[in-house]
Image (cartoon, rainbow, N blue to C red; front, side, top):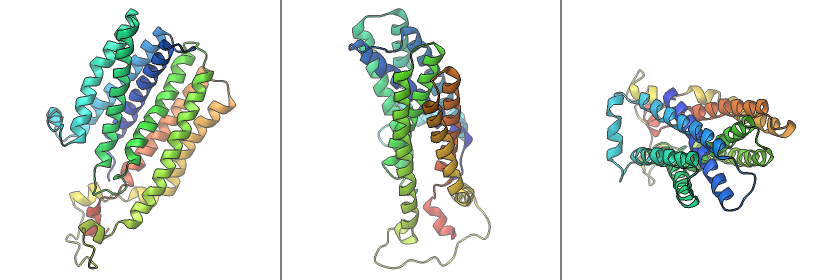
Length: 309
């Protein structure tokens, strides 16, 4: 698939924003339940504002992928059948709930309303992230995406980048960061494991994709007699992207190195000061942009088979 920069930015930015505010809400709920060492109200408000900006920027950038962005509102009209529509509806519900939660935090509201708002914000963030992943996982013509690992990966990577952002926010505020280093390391391990398992499953999906599986014919051997076109078409340009496959091994190694190994070393070898946290966030962001580029570019639509590719 031909990668769209607007969609890459959308998934990385909004994923980090949803992950950050979900972790803030969970930390606040644990603190209200008697936990110690949680972020202060000011830190929750600051982190939540950053999260809302990241989510809003990502969602707005996604409209640039549309041929006519003015028709973006039509995406809300197919909630029963479209994961894209569900994502839009839940994202729209998320913003007033998250803004209301942050307002309650800033105003020092009572325990009950604040806890309810925090829980609803966390759940809406999770649902929206899951819907984003399911937009791709629901596409059967792209075997590399049609896997439960895709929404799991979106959730894990969103919380991983959110945990690093949370660490940076707390380090900037002078808050003790040791428990949050452990949190970031935990999400790093989870996200890296999911990504490596996904890469292994993608290789198997490539091997299983044939013209027989694409047509659904299993009782006879199907072969292509004519590719139909002697030159490139819109389908071959958009759905038969070949650059990523030529550099897939090096690209995946860079994803692991920049996106996971460098942040891991930064968190393990140095105190969690603000410069260290910023380094981890910057490296992870570059790594996740590379990861998302290869996620799109290496996916192989079955239409390529009918063009002899």
